[in-house]
Amino acid sequence: MVKIRVFIPHLELKEIFESVMAELPVRDNVQIEMTYIFGTPDVLSQNCDADILVARGMTHDVLRDMFPDKHVVQIQLNSFDIFDALVQCRKLQARKIALCLHDVEIHCLESLEELCGASIRMYDVPDEKTAEAAVCKAAEEGADTFVGAGTMCGICDRKGLRRVHIHTRHDAVEAAMQEALNAAKTINQERTRSDIIRIMLNHNEDGIIAIDNEDHILAINNQAYRVFQLSTVGELTGQPVSAVYPSGEWDRLLEKGSEKEQIISLHDKKYYVQYKPLSEAEAGAGALIFIKNTDRIMEEESRIRRGLSEKGLTAKYTFEDILGQSEAIQGNIRMAERYSRVNSNVLIIGETGTGKELFAHSIHQASKRSRQPFVALNCAALPENLLESELFGYEAGAFSGAAKGGKIGLFELAHKGTIFLDEIGEIPITLQAKLLRVLQEKEIRRIGSTSVHPVDVRVISATNINIEEKIREGQFRSDLYYRLNLLDISLPPLRERKEDIQELVDAYLTRFACEMGKSIPTVTEDAARILKEHSWQGNVRELRNICERLTVLNDTSVISEELLRQLKIFRKKEEPSVGQPGEGAEDSVYDRLKPRKKKKELAEELGVSRTTLWRMAKRQKELEEKQKKQG
Image (cartoon, rainbow, N blue to C red; front, side, top):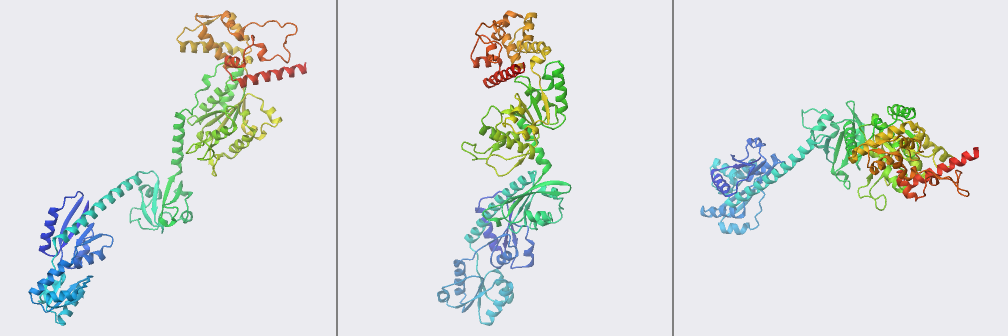
């Protein structure tokens, strides 16, 4: 609500004012009061509760000086008002007129004298004291008629002098009130905006202080009061900002210039403080200071990470999903459970399909980081340039084709959680140095960025190749290997734990039969023997794929040897004839799987990629050559 106070010196002006107000539209949130005051008494100082003051003559001038921060509207005297008063003097047959006004220039005084038939002398009367002196001086100089406003008329009446009052016209009052109402509308709008800004500031969880170019407080929100434990006694607005936090740290922060940030200690807590100039081009325009509790920043970051986890960055498996009762696999589970209690990096070694990813998921799920993100990446699936941007992220415009707003890397996504780097042995040598720095310094630098971001990430990596051999060949950094291999697990291939094959077959056949709406089949003894004696080059993954295929192909309740023989990998081998390759060094995994087929088809049967199949064949060939040399 905006309050307008109108000062009325006499009844005539009151009637004009009431007439004007009856014609003007009613304004919401505006309160209008009339106060009868003649001249410039001391009670004028008691009107500080009004937002807008409307007065004429000396009363206006005194109010303007008394309340420089308020909107003071003047009811103007115009030339026609003065002219009418001088015409009245002619009727009174005045001979010498004293025209008592303030800050008014009349350029056609000689013409007015001729019109009035009298001489006219101007007296400047800014206040009651000068008005009293002007009346006395004019009387001494022989003035017989005095022309002026209310204050002068009162003095003349007291002294018994003839006077003519300059009346205020209706249109002058209307113009003054229209100006006052427009000012009230503006004030209401500004207050509404200020209320909105104040509400927004006070609902912000950060402390916020706005300062001017002299480092004096313009605004301070409730949270800043709480952070600095400020007293509510006294007004902080207008005070130096050093009154909030008298410290040398604060002085360095407030040095004029660009944006700055720092950590301060306050009441046994850490706060992250940002100084942001309102205009970087004009550093003297003031600034905003944001004070954030570091604990709350970390909590928000944790919530963001959990939100990312809900979008898929989460582990799916636990140790209960790892099947097998053999001592080999149970020993690995017990070791992995112990590893899950610490934060050291883990390297999982094993052939393709042995369950390395399953163990990585389970270690994360059993660790203290289980509620944080789990991010997995196959290092062999991407070319070097894409792999670097995936791991470390990039800034906007870092390279051609970069996303407009940049991209966060997987290490940042995995902050406080775990990152699983599968096929770590395939990571390019040029990228290994950057990965090593991340593990050593625990910070990343995005592509195209000049700043670093601290990260807290546990690394679980996996490989199906002999990294030590790659180190000897100069294709893998030994220092990176030792960083990754603080703890290690070697998973046995399925052919070394054949006692687990039947349990795995039972579990997979049951799962796929339920998913397909079929009856769970039984396996004949001959079929079970074949499954157990198979070499399973693709390990558990190959066994799983075979079980799914058997469930699809089988229309009975029994899986027999005949059904297995329909699958090419279980067909009996023919004896090699003369001139045919036998079981020597040239005999590869492709030769042993008869009849011959394309590598793509064979890879699909085994459930592995063509690259992995090639590695399997190469590894087998190298092993047989080694055995041949030893024999």
